[in-house]
Image (cartoon, rainbow, N blue to C red):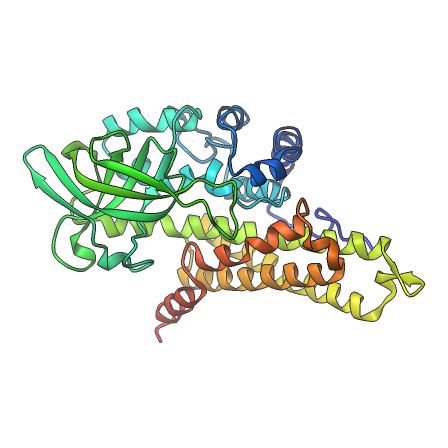
Length: 390
């Protein structure tokens, strides 16, 4: 039986030699700069600052962003992003993504909708790893209910006066800027706008959320705004069009989480197979017990389904034919598969999976945040049903 991380991948007809060279480049970086230290980072609750410029040098931070800001777009496509996510997922430390790659949700609103002046100020500094940006949408009172957010921004001359708070903000403690959803108008989505708020402005304060079930090495914050004066020029997009800016971001965020969850499931499969081949009980290998073989087969079956649908959805996004309902249901499918594979791998490893410094143990801790973040399973099903005209 050979079901390691690579051999478990389905053949992907869309990948070229250039894609695989990119994979090799990212893998070398991960094995040199991340894999040996990631468990320690998780235990200490912090990714070192030096990782950002190192990641920028190999193209991890700039992938998919305009070259005029230091990004990499020529000769790349969405498969490059999927490959990068897969390789970082091999580490089995979920907190790396909401730390190192949180600009993936914080920067697109700026690059796609902000003024040229703001783009030039922010994007190059984020993409070279010298500064950071986060996304501020979730609030203590509303969770995923974006249309009813309560943080207000009232215009007074050349400034917006911002009051309110955001919570569960990935990268929020160390961000230099936060792309922030605010209410500039009346109730509902039509009253929502987006502002780029520098985190060093007077009236901004932050509290760390560091007692989390998972994502231990990630930086998570509650951010408070007390009469914060934000220049009108920091408006992202048009006033009252914030919902459009927010929605534009969701599909790419969800695809990233989908690829992570499918890759984490493969890590669990790999760990389970390796253990089953080596461990002996009652005079024979675990892999020689039918019940164990069936667990492994079921894990592979569910992973195959996720891989096939991920390839389908990625291709549709590339071709401009993406169906948000399909993507929403795929996120649910992948979160359920990740939970199943983490549980079954834990059963196969037994007590060994309950010890720290173990990829299965770390991934099991990340199951719930993946099922909730980027839109909970319940919201994803409801979104899909509306997309299908129910």
